[in-house]
Amino acid sequence: MLIRRTRKSDVRSSEITSESIYYRRREFIKAAGTIAAGSLVAPQMLWSRTLDDLDALRPFPDVAPSEFSTSAEPNSLEDISSYNNFYEYGMGKDDPKRLAPGLLRVEPWSVEVDGECENPGTYTYEDLVRPHQLEERIYRFRCVEAWSMVIPWVGIPMADVLKRFQPTSRAKYVELRTLQDPEQMPAQRGSSSIPWPYVEGLRIDEAMHPLSIFAVGIYGRELPAQNGAPIRLVVPWKYGFKCGKSLVKIRFTEEQPKNTWQVIAPNEYGFYANVNPNVSHPRWSQARERRIGRFFRQDTLMFNGYEEEVADLYAGMDLSTRQNW
Ligand SMILES: Nc1nc2c(c(=O)[nH]1)N[C@H]1C(S)=C(S)[C@@H](COP(=O)(O)O)O[C@H]1N2
Ligand SMILES: [Mo]
Image (tube, rainbow, N blue to C red; front, side):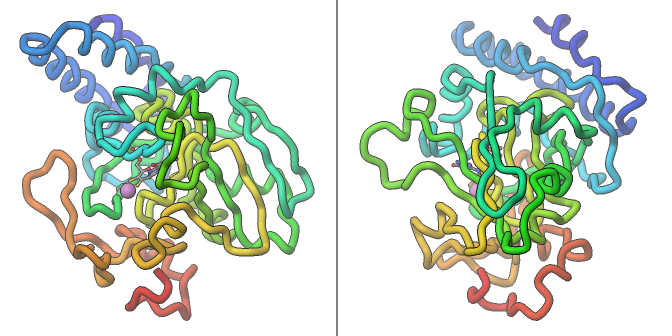
């Protein structure tokens, strides 16, 4: 297992930074160590299932580095793929890893595009992704629950994809929907307190910002199911819940979309959800965060550290209260 997995890490070294190669290598070593130690105490079935799932993820042959990547140390693939929020599989952090790989069918996959655009239609995953150069984007990721990670995504700029659909002048927002299929997503069966499908949205200029990406992978490989395979949104200056997973619909709208968390608890979650250490959640502070894998908490940064890049998008908006939350 270990040998096979190491050999498969054949992302071309010319395509990525030496730093990310370093982290990727170390990641494999770390993951292998965890598995070896775990198999002493855990039933072999559990571990081999986990290993097979990650092992089956194909590496992308051509991933370019990006100037937008942070030099912060990425979390391990183990962390990123085993501590998840994906309520379609349950509310526990370990539910998505346990259930999504066996249930979510990512091939074939297509995305429906409609609303205020000149080129609506149904696009396959290949239609969407293949025309674009894949990039490695190592981003900070901050959940509204006050934990964070650093994740080496593989993705494509959202703007480049959205422009192909030619949004009209009436397209003020873009709404993004996750798959709805109770057979593949067990929490959608029966009654649920969440109105499925999971919906997120961005103002069109936020969606077109160069930091916004459609992510299709992590650590040079395809996305694990639990991270929202095969394609998900990543907007690094916003709380993690804006980053809808397993997307099947892109809709250009004139009206601001109603995103799922805002619908569930409008007094706690808004549309913008920009990371802001000065504005508390009604039930907890957002001033600090726990980076997964670290012991001490650290300060949360305005716009998750992307203030220089994105502050202009919110010029004139009051960000000191929950008004534009
Ligand atoms: N469809 C869907 N997308 C979702 C969620 C979800 O429950 N369902 N959870 C969100 C939240 S709260 C977070 S923090 C991130 C977690 O992404 P990760 O598990 O890849 O780290 O996904 C977001 N996207
Ligand atoms: Mo989150």
